[in-house]
Image (tube, rainbow, N blue to C red; front, side, top):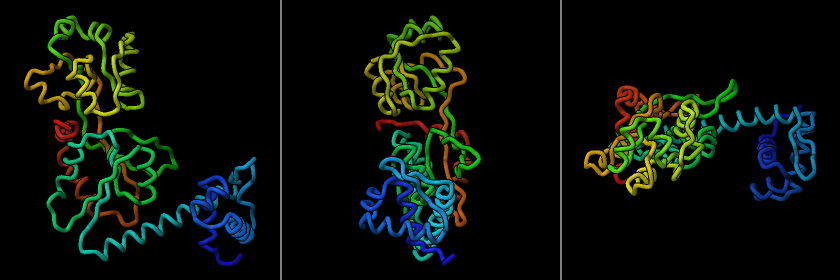
Length: 308
């Protein structure tokens, strides 16, 4: 077999990801015929068909899936090499952090605190969905993902997950809800209008499991996918919020809101997700070490949104 043409391999990887020659050609800004010709050349070099056509789509054969695994490793190593030597060549060190768009800003600031104010460090922050940030992590475009959702893992997944903080969760509402709260948690959960995290959140999954065990059908007044909105809905007295008390610490202190009941066994966790790298970012080691030193005491920062 001739020496493998990495340009052909890169085109093959694009077609495998896009699913059609047309989409791959558009993404690569070259003609569809050029993509087709070079994929055929790669198949000839390897001695195997890499795709089979199903309607308008191209589907990987078994040989194609094997080739894609190797292609991902080759180009990931290439990107890692380039990133490593870019960092070595510069005087300032860079840490690239991805954070779930709905994650507490105060938690992010607490995580970054060891690096803030340093003249030799640049911090790059990106927010997005869990899926988009995991792709960025695998492509080495970020060094770490901060999230309160543990990514699905199996024997083949590359993710390394580290818990940074944990905090309790309570029912929080206005003064007018105190009399109902005095009747006990089951009554409060079954009769009060509730402000809940949205169903895809880890916190909501734990809450749903708890009320199912208690045999309670909740009255849902509102749902929100981030802590600041849950806080604002609680302040507006739209219902009783399922929320970590630290998120509304100012309102609890001045009597605008009250902690009506703690939810036993329910907590919110914050995690740092990384992948194994040949040349890990030394700044990441610093911030993870600092977070480990703080342990669960960091939970005070983990959800405190203040006015955010």
